[in-house]
Length: 153
Image (cartoon, rainbow, N blue to C red; front, side):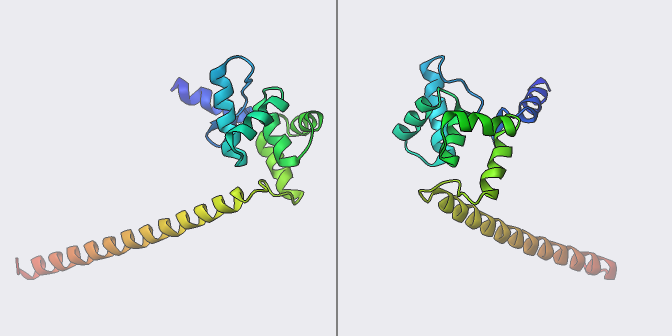
């Protein structure tokens, strides 16, 4: 129960992006630097070395690095944008989309969109199959009930 409460609190105050904790200060130790680089690489589509370079340019702040990458801006502009979005990366992400800047210039976003589309198509197909199975089972059950009513066990 306590985990749920703290998770909801972290989401509300903008420390997460999706299922990732992005409000990380990666200046503390090597483990946090590695985690921050993986998060940046995942959200931006950059390679590990580029993600580490971006993390270093952002002063070890993951949120700032993500905004810097998406908006192609410096540290000060990224800080201002985050402040305008009240520290929430989601708010800044909406501004990115409204401004017409694609979230990722190397094609990773298009690739992810294609994967999501394929996932949704597969999901719809599974739902159709499940619906067909349920219809079949309900038909069989109706026939059994009808035959029992007629006395044809």
